[in-house]
Amino acid sequence: MKIAIEGCCHSELDAIYRELKRQEEKTQSQVDVLLIAGDFQAVRNEADLACLSVPEKYRKLGDFSSYYSGEKKAPVLTIFVGGNHEASNYLWELYYGGWVCPNIYYMGAANIINIGGLRVGGISGIYKEKNYTKGHFEKVPYNMESLKSVYHVREFEVCKLLNTGRTKPIDIFLSHDWPRGIEKHGDLKRLLSIKPYFFNDIQNNCLGSAANERLMNELQPAYWFSAHLHVKFEAIKIHNVYENWKENMVEMVKENPDEIDLNDEDDKVITKIEASHKITRFLALDKCLPGRHFLEILDIPTPHEVNEKPILSYDVDWLAICRVFHPYFSIEYQQPSLPWDNAYLAREIEKEKEWVYDHIVQLHGLEIPQHFEHTAPVVGNAFSAYPPPLYNNPQTEAFCKML
Ligand code: 5GP
Ligand code: MN
Image (cartoon, rainbow, N blue to C red; front, side, top):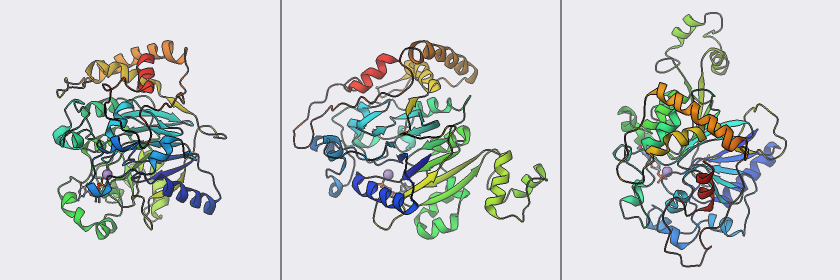
C-alpha cells in the first residue's frame, strides 16, 4: 500500500495535496492513504478559533474550513492524530475518532484501527508531565490554562494503548511528538547540526515524549511516524537490545554469528537483524512550508493487495479495551486510579472481545461507517453555545450506542 506521511499540517491542506500530486506524478504512483502527524487545525469557523492555542498572528481560518463547508473535497483518504495546535473543541466532539469532513478521519484521543489490512495505532496531543495523570476535565469555553492542557496526553489513553500489543502486532503508529530518546537511534550529529538547541534536552534525556517512548518499547510497531520538532529525521530502533545498536553490534554478532557480518553495509546488516529482532522504523517529518521535507511516500506491504480505496475498520481488541476502561474514563480533574494488573486485564479484555464479536462483529460488521455530519455552521455564522461534551456529535453518539 502506498502511504504518504505528512509532518505538521497547520491547516495547509491545499499545499499538502498539491505536493502529494507532484510526488505522485514524479514517482508515477498513486497514494492510497495520507497520514498526518498532528497540528492539523480542523478549524470550521470563527468560533473554533477561540479553542485553538496559537500565537495571535496565526489565529486565522485555514484551508480546512473550505473542506468542512464542502467547497473542496480531500482527493485522498486522509487520517490524522491531533497535536498541540488544534480546534480542541471539535476534536473533543470526536473523542473516539470520526470524520471531521468527508474523506478526512481523526483518530481520536487514542485509537487502533485497521487501514486496508494494516493495524494502525495513534495518540493525539503532546506529553506534559504535570497533566499526565489528570482526567479530561477541560470544558468549553476554555480558559488560558485549559486551552493548553486540553491537548496534553493523559495516562488513561496510554494505559489503554499499552494493552493493544498483546496478541496482534501493530504495523504503524502515529504520534505528534517524538518518542523520547529516539534521536539516539539515528544520525544524531546531523540532527544537532540542524537543531543545535536540542543539545541540552538530549543531554537531559527530555527531548520528546516519555509516554511515546514507553509505547514504542512495548508495542514495537514496524513503523512509527511523528512531527512537531520541525525537522526530517529517520531512525531505526532495535528492540530488546540495550542502548545504541551500532555499539551493540558485537553482542548481536555473538548472538547470531552466522547471520551478521560487521563488514556488510548498514542496510544489509539491518535486514539481517530484522530476521532475529523486532525493529521500529521511525520517520519524523517537517511542517508544511516551501522547501522543507514535510511529505514522503512509503510503500508498505499489506497482507492483501489493495485495489480500490483501502477500507477502514475497527479493531476488535481496541473496542474490547474501550469497554474494559470505560468505568475509569473521567471528565473531571481527578482520574480514578488505573488498572495495571496484566493478568486481570488480559482476562477482562478476552471477556469483552466475546461481547464485541456477538454485538458488533455479528450485527454491524467492523467497517467504520462514513457518516460525517456537520455539527457546527460553516464559515461566517456566529456559533457560541456548544452543547455538553461527548454526546454532541452524532458520530460519537452512534459509537457510544454501539459499544
Ligand atoms: P509547534 O509547531 O508545535 O508550535 O512547536 C514546535 C517547535 O517547538 C519546534 O520548532 C521545536 O523545535 C520546538 N520544540 C518542541 N518541543 C521541544 C522540546 O522538547 N525541546 C526543544 N528544544 N524544542 C522543542
Ligand atoms: Mn506541534
